[in-house]
Length: 279
Image (cartoon, rainbow, N blue to C red; front, side):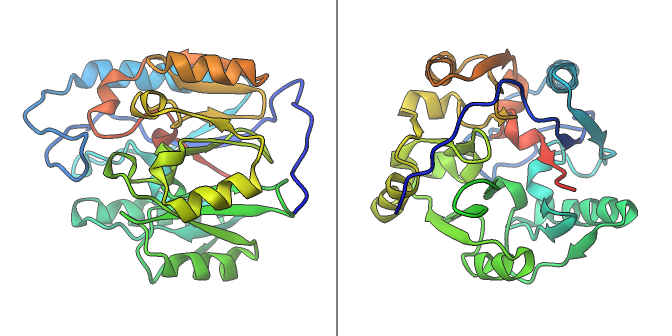
């Protein structure tokens, strides 16, 4: 297979994102290793940090649309998990845990108002949390995680729905229960990832597909350094992930650091709070 080669963009590509404010964010249950209901959440600080992320994205030229928060859905701030869209076709989420199930309905209603084609899922999947799109890699490829949240059978239906090749990758470390905590798309063709979050077979697949990838270590991944947003030039990343920021800068990207300590208490960081609207 011929390796993907590309030139780093001089400026980021303008994108449209979906976010949901954390005005009702709380840790009321534990559905991942990061959550501790005994640890208090500073909602005011969570909102301030979320606003900092939103302002960072708009400040580099991107549009942010808002999904209204619901008081009965404390995890709704993690907007990446509600769906996955390509070319105005939306593959809806079907959450693993009942505490988050109604979030999928809120996302479906948003896309229906938008007028996009919405496909209701039959298999469990958690949207952009487990799917990453690289439109310039091998004709347009979707990397799809499974092992903790998303049913691998959903990958087949995703491929049929979006008419894009889907590469299944098995996650094996519960700290990295979503793909977006272990791998990030840096532009249309390039990725960064933490190898040990994946099975040996999936590591081989990633090495073959992305020989020039930015490789993270465990400290980078545990600092949510891969749960980032990139427009091909600017990379918005958690401020605690200093080592990852250095690696990204060495690869030619421009890291933009944001503080996100409160929202880490729910097991997510920058990318978890943002879904891309690919119209």
